[in-house]
Image 1 (cartoon, rainbow, N blue to C red):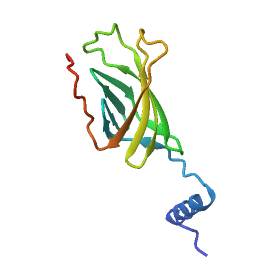
Image 2 (spheres, one colour):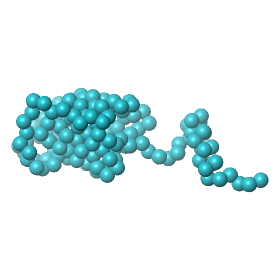
Image 3 (cartoon, rainbow, N blue to C red):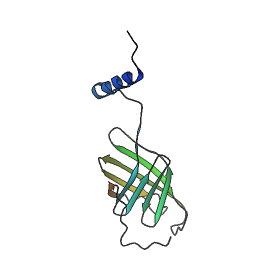
Image 4 (cartoon, helix red, strand yellow):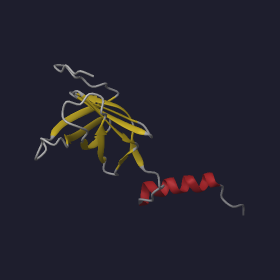
Length: 137
């Protein structure tokens, strides 16, 4: 009897994963462009950019997504023009469901204690809207 090929073994593991919770060992990550009111997130395997009014935060990628769709991210703002007194982190957490991303974020600005959390809904493929803001970049 011939031995099974690696493709047959992979197919079998895939069927077992569906029925018995077998893991293929691959982790899920968030990628693409996501936008909403006052926030844009662009992620690939190497970096993540989060744009909020007048600041862009950057962190190395990828963003790992848990089995239930949740994720967490911390990044630091670019020191281009910074009227807030230095660099500080952004903390972003949320849940992905299809093409929608529900998230909450706060910045670790020194004047913010306790931090004020902002809730946003982002849509995959959208650019984000920043109407009502004038930023000097």
